[in-house]
Length: 166
Image (cartoon, rainbow, N blue to C red; front, side):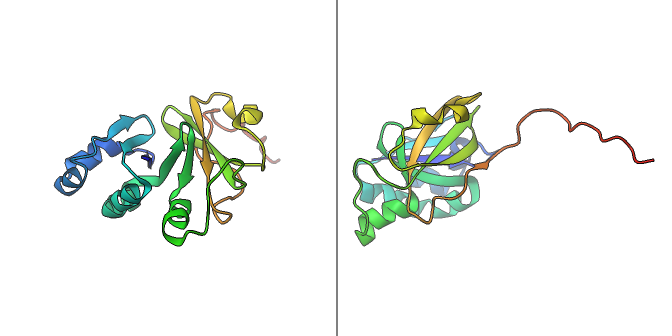
């Protein structure tokens, strides 16, 4: 089980976690890897991953957008879904998970979150890939699926000026 901590804009999460003695001590056995969008941490099990996220709770609230748990390469699931699977046992993950989103990144920044239709594949969302470095599929709870939104403004330049009123 692996964890991907998506950092907030303007934060170097890897540096921040290793600048603090407390978080450095929590992470001393995990060897986190810096990624353009945050930090990637390998854990043995879902239980140990949830425990690590709980230990880092203060840092995650302050410096991350959200923690994601890797199910398989390029497929992650949310913290809420991880808790439902592990603690509540209300969700059983399997092929064809109904509630999904597609996160797209550009230069390490999350630029879009698009709800995915049941049964669709990430390749079907080719319009969202324009100008994007990479995308990942996120499995989530029904409450986590929201309308897609643009996470960062496009660099299109200034708005055209309106003619002045007479």
